[in-house]
Length: 403
Length: 210
Image 1 (tube, chains in turn green, cyan):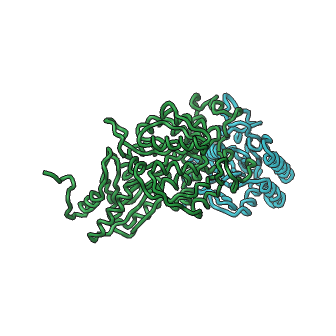
Image 2: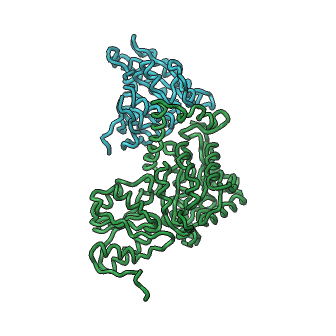
Image 3: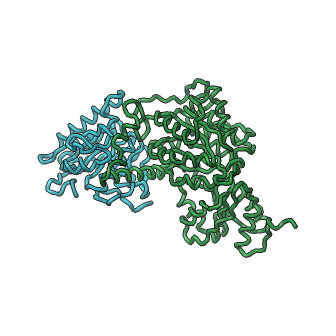
């Protein structure tokens, strides 16, 4: 609608060239680099044409937040500051996004929980903020170690929720995430999650796009809701808020508003498939045994498959990339041949297994496990052991070592 | 694939968003009719037919075209006025084309004046009051358009059309996407071309059902 000229091919103030995102992500040369996940977040944001990043320290995302401060000092970010708390940060992110900025933030564990009130507000206001969630323990007694329970709390906020396995996923999905969440028919916040420490604090080879290329800037005039200005501040929307009225149409309007948020999540499906090359990745879908996992549990599952192959047991894999939108049809199709579906997870409740049980026919096939939590690692051997036990095969107990 | 179709209501106490029922938006160069992807050519003809059949065909322009905040908006507004004038020229006696703006998205309490405006939070009031049985949304922000279209589908039998500048609307019975001055003019041309070929449903119950 707005008369914006294409900036593709022009330079920003740092000399980076605004590049067609598809070309940048799929055709531009990549440079292998040995980085931690936190450093990869910095490198993605260097190329993301972000207007505002708001930070608050909480392990294990603090390093990434600090590194992005360096980007601000170098002139790659329009504005950067520390909020008073996670709740304040997420509220300030909303303010920046209402004003038409491309916004980025990072959080983790109790910080995610503290800020929770803001997330349905972001979705309801159709703000395409990107938030990195470096998952860690959330309950008392305190733990800063990897644990994915906080993702379960994000699933019904109306945000898009993606779960990265590797630092490479992280680099690519930060950039692609803006392309999906800023589509006018989507225009929702994205929680891009990873397993804290396992991804943020370990080094891996990551193929980076050229540092002199960057995303086209966000165009707030494509927003499905009016951009905030002096004529249309959010408070005017609330002058006669639905909540103050008690009649059918006020309730129906609010209900329709909620439905529209979830309709937008549905619409993100098409764009996510386009940018992520599908909502899931699969291997050996003709196998009787399937492992379905997200995050670093996928890596452990892959290694378990290799160990099982050494014993002549064939096993397939489904890597779930997006939790919202939920790849219902894809998972049903990928597991249709499976007699057993194992769901290894780094949390105590098994939220992913519950989603899968609600998705596949004959859900008695789903084995919710193995689970670890509170920072425990998940040796591939315990996945192997879980599978062999379910198959009635002799196995060993890692916990049985020692005197 | 889904069996769900986006049809005139009244559909339900709280009808679902069409996207949640599996209806997908058209790709560039396409449109949808009742939730089924169709060519734009077919959509122009169907939209024109619906307008020519309606007793009270109505255009609802939104804030994106009500103010000349850029040159393109001003041109679109001119095209919409042309569409309205074309409609008035092409209808038969007994048909009553209307042009009712949606100037403001804030809920209007205690009472909206449905003769002069429509509001996305209670659009059915304007549909009912004016007995509108076919309408087109143009220049309305997508979120507000979807709210309106779904509420209209829930409580009225009005046939809804969206001339969307972005990706289109599943909650309309017919939707164009990437709407431009040219597309608005082409709809006007199609109405002119089909003039006299469509019988208006003047005797039938109109859109102000329930």
